[in-house]
Image 1 (cartoon, rainbow, N blue to C red):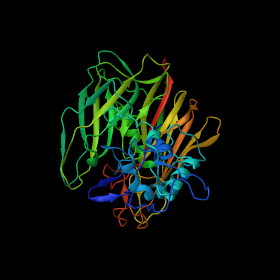
Image 2 (tube, one colour):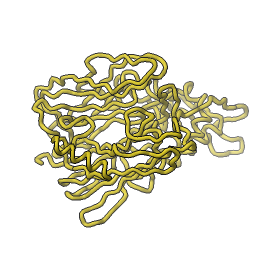
Image 3 (cartoon, helix red, strand yellow):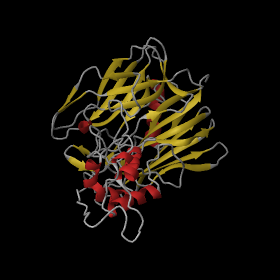
Amino acid sequence: MYRGTWHNHTFGGIVIGIVTVMISSIGVAGLSAAGANGAETVPTFTKDVAPILYEACVMCHRPGEVAPMSLISYRETRPWGRSIKNKVLSGEMPPWHADPTVGRFSNERRLTEAERDIIARWVDGGAPEGDADQLPPAPVFADGWQIGTPDVVIEMPTAFDVPAEGEVDYQYFSTPTQFTEDKWVQAIEVRPGARSVVHHILAFVQDPSGARPSSAYRQIPIGAAAEAAAARARERGREGAGPGGPRRTLIGTMAPGTNPQVFEPDTAMRIPKGSELVFQLHYTAVGEAASDRSRVGLIFADAPPAREMRSGAFLNAYFEIPAGATDERVDTLIEFTQDVEVTALFPHSHLLGTRWEYRLTYPDGRTETVLSVPKYDFNWQAYYQFEEPLTVPKGARIEASAWYDNSAANKSNPDPTIAVGWGEQTWDEMQYSGITYSVKKEQ
């Protein structure tokens, strides 16, 4: 299970939501693994703490990854002890923002009460190292890939030079997959080449036949502006087109804090033979020039699956958040055109986003909240993967609601004096939801 940890991003010279951790020395004088009066034994790093870090933290807290420090060895971890304790006890780390009373998720990044207690007692007890023989083997990662060694890695055809300053338009790069037969993909990981300047990556597959991507839902416009845009899209034959266009299928996403997509056994995503992989990249200048050549790693299924995974998005681009608004709500609605199993949802807004909620309404009128993110964090986004897929019948609807704070009270707000609408840059806003779901393959 992936249960990631600290994350740090700088956008356009503005430091956003950085987890600030100060190195604190931990006094050890007069302390030992056990109290003189037979008090409870103090946990040690090798026996008690390292297993927790290896399971929940070092996916990110290792050399070359997004976290600001490595937590693999005792020497690396001990100086951060008090900060680790504080962040763990406050619930800030590992980062997980879904309401624990709504839904169950297979990729949940939470420590148990017992694990938090071990870390707190270890720090309070002087952070002893323990017996080296009790240290478990550190996790082994395949060249940084969280999914393991990919069967194939597809890179951007050329590197892109990101300037030190200024706005950078969305960049698109297309690379042939060179697949001579249809491929069924079990796991997908999108990795940036230069993390500091990559805001997000969307990876699409473009079918060489020009066939329209299959979709099991349609978006229902909300509001006059959205309804007019939908009518224009129908006239142009683009109804239902996602963010990559009407002839592309979204297969993978990388955004701050996201984790790779690994599908359940006997489910996989199809990439047609002869397809091209299209990278959509959002770069942000950070005051220092950088060169990026991002890539996508794929692991193939051993055999064709019983259910086909599909990935898509739905969004509302027709909104304006007034200057000073503290709790502005924006909604999106989709209706399913066939029976599906929804496996994950991905809420995405920018610096003004504060919370999200997804409600599933069945054809008989029953409604349930399936995902609530009461404290949305732009720096830690996630595909929330349901522990058990949602069984969604034809005719059911999912409504996504996002709330925004465009006031001076929002410390991440670049400018609370102006209204903000949809846009691609970080200082603009989005109301965007990713969705993964499966259908029976014969459909």
